[in-house]
Length: 158
View 1 (cartoon, rainbow, N blue to C red):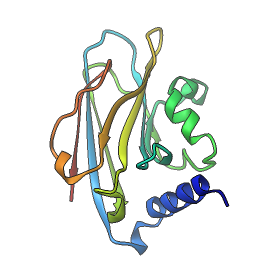
View 2 (cartoon, helix red, strand yellow):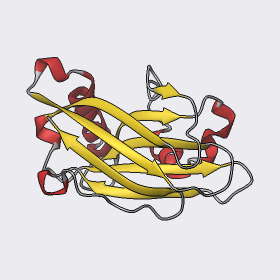
View 3 (cartoon, rainbow, N blue to C red):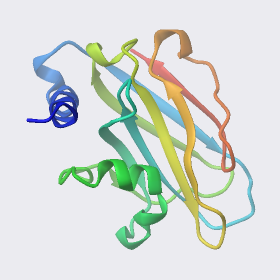
Protein backbone atom coordinates (compact mmCIF):
# COMPACT_ATOMS: atom_id res chain seq x y z
CA UNK A 1 0.00 0.00 0.00
CA UNK A 2 1.12 3.52 -0.65
CA UNK A 3 2.02 5.75 2.27
CA UNK A 4 -0.76 8.33 1.56
CA UNK A 5 -3.34 5.53 1.44
CA UNK A 6 -2.08 4.14 4.75
CA UNK A 7 -2.29 7.63 6.28
CA UNK A 8 -5.89 8.04 5.06
CA UNK A 9 -6.82 4.57 6.33
CA UNK A 10 -5.24 5.22 9.72
CA UNK A 11 -6.98 8.57 10.07
CA UNK A 12 -10.29 7.13 8.90
CA UNK A 13 -10.03 4.40 11.52
CA UNK A 14 -9.24 7.00 14.17
CA UNK A 15 -12.31 8.99 13.12
CA UNK A 16 -14.63 6.02 12.64
CA UNK A 17 -13.70 4.01 15.70
CA UNK A 18 -13.33 6.52 18.55
CA UNK A 19 -14.99 4.13 21.01
CA UNK A 20 -12.04 1.76 20.63
CA UNK A 21 -9.48 4.48 21.30
CA UNK A 22 -9.37 7.34 23.74
CA UNK A 23 -11.38 10.15 22.25
CA UNK A 24 -12.51 13.67 22.93
CA UNK A 25 -15.53 15.55 21.79
CA UNK A 26 -14.86 18.62 19.66
CA UNK A 27 -17.53 21.24 19.05
CA UNK A 28 -16.91 23.66 16.18
CA UNK A 29 -18.86 26.89 15.72
CA UNK A 30 -18.64 28.72 12.40
CA UNK A 31 -20.26 32.17 12.47
CA UNK A 32 -21.04 33.36 8.95
CA UNK A 33 -20.80 36.97 7.83
CA UNK A 34 -23.83 38.83 6.49
CA UNK A 35 -22.50 38.51 2.93
CA UNK A 36 -25.86 39.26 1.27
CA UNK A 37 -26.37 36.05 -0.65
CA UNK A 38 -28.08 32.67 -0.51
CA UNK A 39 -27.26 29.97 2.03
CA UNK A 40 -23.69 28.73 2.06
CA UNK A 41 -22.59 25.20 1.34
CA UNK A 42 -19.83 24.31 3.80
CA UNK A 43 -17.57 21.26 4.02
CA UNK A 44 -15.94 20.77 7.43
CA UNK A 45 -13.08 18.28 7.25
CA UNK A 46 -9.71 17.28 8.68
CA UNK A 47 -6.32 17.09 7.03
CA UNK A 48 -3.14 15.60 8.44
CA UNK A 49 0.19 17.34 8.95
CA UNK A 50 1.04 16.88 5.24
CA UNK A 51 -2.30 18.29 4.05
CA UNK A 52 -3.77 14.91 3.13
CA UNK A 53 -7.48 14.35 3.68
CA UNK A 54 -8.23 12.61 6.98
CA UNK A 55 -12.04 12.67 7.14
CA UNK A 56 -15.23 14.66 6.74
CA UNK A 57 -16.90 16.01 9.88
CA UNK A 58 -19.91 17.74 8.27
CA UNK A 59 -21.24 18.98 4.93
CA UNK A 60 -23.88 21.72 5.03
CA UNK A 61 -25.93 21.76 1.83
CA UNK A 62 -28.15 19.03 0.51
CA UNK A 63 -27.65 18.98 -3.25
CA UNK A 64 -24.63 16.86 -4.21
CA UNK A 65 -24.41 18.49 -7.65
CA UNK A 66 -23.01 21.61 -5.92
CA UNK A 67 -20.29 19.80 -3.95
CA UNK A 68 -17.86 20.39 -6.83
CA UNK A 69 -17.82 24.03 -5.69
CA UNK A 70 -16.31 22.90 -2.36
CA UNK A 71 -13.23 22.29 -4.43
CA UNK A 72 -10.45 21.53 -1.93
CA UNK A 73 -12.67 19.15 0.05
CA UNK A 74 -14.10 17.60 -3.12
CA UNK A 75 -10.64 17.01 -4.59
CA UNK A 76 -9.08 15.71 -1.36
CA UNK A 77 -11.99 13.47 -0.35
CA UNK A 78 -12.88 12.06 -3.77
CA UNK A 79 -11.48 8.63 -2.88
CA UNK A 80 -13.53 8.36 0.33
CA UNK A 81 -16.67 6.42 -0.59
CA UNK A 82 -18.09 7.06 2.90
CA UNK A 83 -17.33 10.78 3.04
CA UNK A 84 -21.03 11.68 3.32
CA UNK A 85 -22.33 8.89 5.57
CA UNK A 86 -24.44 10.64 8.21
CA UNK A 87 -22.64 13.97 7.96
CA UNK A 88 -24.89 16.18 5.85
CA UNK A 89 -27.47 18.85 6.59
CA UNK A 90 -29.02 22.03 5.26
CA UNK A 91 -27.03 24.97 3.91
CA UNK A 92 -26.27 27.79 6.35
CA UNK A 93 -27.78 31.25 5.86
CA UNK A 94 -25.82 34.49 5.93
CA UNK A 95 -25.29 35.72 9.48
CA UNK A 96 -26.12 32.30 10.95
CA UNK A 97 -23.95 29.87 12.92
CA UNK A 98 -23.13 26.27 12.06
CA UNK A 99 -22.33 24.07 15.08
CA UNK A 100 -20.76 20.66 14.54
CA UNK A 101 -19.90 18.16 17.27
CA UNK A 102 -17.77 15.07 16.65
CA UNK A 103 -15.75 12.54 18.61
CA UNK A 104 -12.11 12.60 17.59
CA UNK A 105 -9.30 10.30 18.67
CA UNK A 106 -6.91 11.93 21.13
CA UNK A 107 -4.08 11.06 18.75
CA UNK A 108 -5.35 13.69 16.27
CA UNK A 109 -5.07 16.58 18.74
CA UNK A 110 -1.74 18.43 18.82
CA UNK A 111 -0.48 16.11 16.07
CA UNK A 112 -0.44 18.53 13.12
CA UNK A 113 -4.02 17.96 11.98
CA UNK A 114 -6.08 20.89 10.72
CA UNK A 115 -9.77 21.62 10.68
CA UNK A 116 -10.65 23.11 7.30
CA UNK A 117 -13.84 24.55 5.93
CA UNK A 118 -14.55 25.10 2.24
CA UNK A 119 -17.42 27.47 1.41
CA UNK A 120 -19.54 28.14 -1.67
CA UNK A 121 -22.55 30.40 -2.24
CA UNK A 122 -24.74 30.43 -5.36
CA UNK A 123 -23.86 33.25 -7.77
CA UNK A 124 -20.88 34.26 -5.62
CA UNK A 125 -17.20 33.31 -5.61
CA UNK A 126 -16.25 29.88 -4.19
CA UNK A 127 -13.87 29.90 -1.24
CA UNK A 128 -11.73 26.75 -0.98
CA UNK A 129 -10.03 26.39 2.40
CA UNK A 130 -12.09 29.38 3.62
CA UNK A 131 -10.63 28.81 7.06
CA UNK A 132 -7.85 26.51 8.30
CA UNK A 133 -7.19 25.98 12.01
CA UNK A 134 -4.65 23.62 13.56
CA UNK A 135 -6.42 21.08 15.79
CA UNK A 136 -4.37 21.98 18.85
CA UNK A 137 -5.10 22.67 22.48
CA UNK A 138 -3.52 26.12 22.07
CA UNK A 139 -6.31 27.09 19.62
CA UNK A 140 -9.23 26.02 21.83
CA UNK A 141 -11.71 28.89 22.19
CA UNK A 142 -9.69 31.27 19.99
CA UNK A 143 -11.71 32.69 17.08
CA UNK A 144 -10.07 32.25 13.68
CA UNK A 145 -11.21 34.52 10.84
CA UNK A 146 -12.30 33.14 7.47
CA UNK A 147 -11.37 34.63 4.10
CA UNK A 148 -14.77 35.51 2.63
CA UNK A 149 -17.93 34.03 4.17
CA UNK A 150 -16.94 32.95 7.68
CA UNK A 151 -16.65 35.67 10.32
CA UNK A 152 -15.03 33.29 12.80
CA UNK A 153 -14.45 29.64 13.59
CA UNK A 154 -13.93 28.49 17.16
CA UNK A 155 -13.73 25.04 18.66
CA UNK A 156 -13.96 23.54 22.12
CA UNK A 157 -12.59 20.21 23.37
CA UNK A 158 -14.22 18.18 26.11
